[in-house]
Image (tube, rainbow, N blue to C red; front, side, top):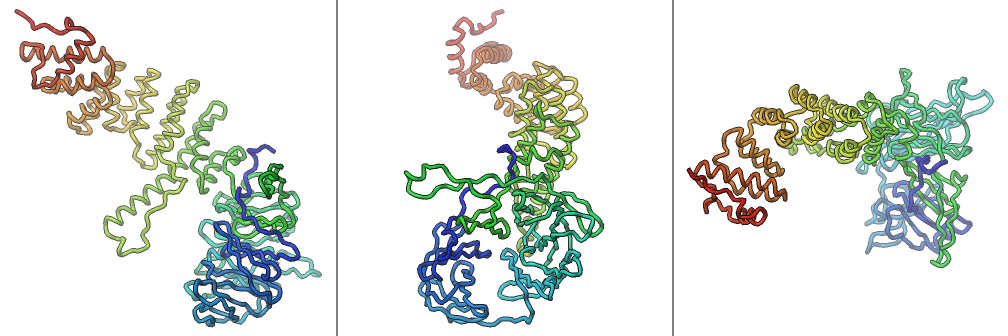
Length: 628
């Protein structure tokens, strides 16, 4: 398998801890994402490490028997240790407070070293599952264990949510199927909490293979079965959620597949069926660096056994190998997916939902315009439309936010938040910089295709009522001029395919020498924009279009009143001696016509330009006063 084929990988910098052995017990706390290595019941030390912890926490505690479970409170202030099935011991880790343990069964009050009972529920519980991100606990009840009772914790209170039943697969009369804790996971996908049930045999006898059933668990209202992910294979599975994708690992084949519930599936009236987005692939091979002093570590790293039976998977994206002493975060690699998903529309739908998608999306846009991978215009149009739909959504949200702020709603509505600009917002400057400007410069691309693509992008922007930036219009005009397609340029302007703007009008003025009608087209545009004449001259001069500026001024009859120095400054800056000669001669002739003498008066402050003219062209090139 090529390097470009692996779309899942283990993070580069895992958390390394002392591997599990008869003396060292390893625990994982899902809320704080911390690994505890407890040696000899804590008597010879406890080391706590987490993915974001710069410094591990180390301490010792008295060996009071086998530790069944150990966790910190959020912010590592209180340590909880469970040694028997009925008690939990707490100790304060707050600076300057007592380290003495206190034992009880309820809300912790560290300053009083006691606990307070807030609420109790009488339920027969088989097992429980807790989701720290959403603060929801799920209790398995009844004999079969398939009636789940959720509770939601918030600000020190506990709320009971409606219970729901997990449909177990049909089983032969002789066997009693219980719902196993191993087959249930909870995770937040696209901001919603789901309970994921790994059903090893489908409910319908004719369909082979396992499936993952997703139950949506809302804060209000009943839990509802929403999605079924078809695995079409059997065996040992494990689940992760990464970047809103459900990842299903299959131990027997040592491969994984990913599902995206936002992509279109098959809706059967009650639930949506989904198939893997991509073919099954292994996680990218991982090398374990050899630990030890520098001279020793020069030996080559050891390949890690992927999909090992000692792997334990935690939500959302954690894989732990207790036998090797590593905790990894699972990651999705987007670039390899580009070649595994040939349907560009579906590929865009997929990429636009991912966190780090912008550069990959832009590379897809560039790729579909290359000679070897050229897409058809309808496909290109689909891609542009999908991008601009996201872009428009963001622009509208930004506009609504601005309007609400101006209307002073921020005080009355504290929930008003500035919209977040995600990487899925690919705007015109992104497309221009990374895709379109390079594309128009490729000599081998047929110019008709280049123009069609540019116009397709402009059409898409117009369709979503997004104001087209002038630099895109300039790109179209430059391409048309390059290929002498002036008739097409004329039509585009005549039918307002290219929107009026001052920069565009100035560009047209500069094209007059190639295409004389451009002068009039430009003036018409400026009149429609009701632009001040001196502003037009300034813009043209700033773009070094000195002759165009002069022609424009002559066209409106203002050439007798303009500053010679301003034009001579601009001409000199171009480093074009012949241009400087032309402009200088024009003003000499103007002086002759208005004052009967070609020389400049002291008030015009043109001495340095006269000196420069003499230096380049000689004294004899100066105009002599006309004699009659």
